[in-house]
Length: 239
Image (tube, rainbow, N blue to C red; front, side):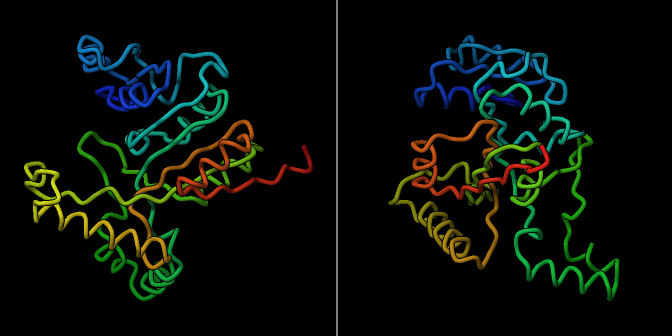
């Protein structure tokens, strides 16, 4: 199931990738209805991420791509996802860079000591809101480790991504290696990926898989091969 899949694009991608059954969901189904008529998706329904009208363990996996930061109460959605999913869920969201890079955290702490107002002038999107009224909630690897540990879940897998190189007019650039502007974007991405690989800069985005059941050895190998870092959560000895 996809959650917050406004146009059904995520569900369409999964179907085209060989997933046999995908239910596309969003709070509003107006655009999903259009996608269904166009043959892009096969099933859709209206769902509120913070109160999903489905039974426990009723779908295998839930994908929530770049919708989590829109939710007024994002943690409510996390608990609903792990309730409804049989095996786990996947979140793809912008990363909170401060929690990833110790030097950034150190600088932030110093600036707050020197002048509490100065940090907000430098870190302009510290408190970021969208016109619809929601706070833009960024995620961190540590945050989901704690979430998994609190619920006694077995494992999380995290992949760092750098997908955002948008600028005004980029949508008109042809994706061809003979196009100099397109090549410039590719070079920027390669450079950012290298910085992320060696820990010199945080990735823009995280893809986080939270498992409700332990992934099989085959799945673990496939995830590692695709660049995911797996963290096994120790079982709570008091449960």
